[in-house]
Image 1 (spheres, helix red, strand yellow):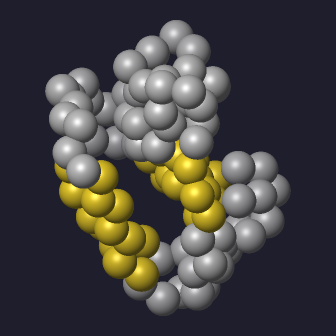
Image 2 (cartoon, one colour):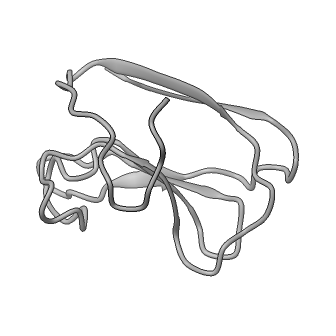
Length: 100
């Protein structure tokens, strides 16, 4: 298994316009800043999510919260996305994102 290290890509993949991404997550607390869970990007130099493809998708915890921001982006707004309700602490939650 790869070791997760901040700002260290673990793989390169080819993306598709239609996809389904699913994983289980157990929040055990919060962090002061944005808590990155994952980010698929077409720009390894600039991952600010201001351009189409830089966050396709990307998922973060909000600062000091267990709500998720899911960034998908489109050709007019690179950081377009949506928010979720807060996830319960210390409970496994299935997260599924389907784009088609």
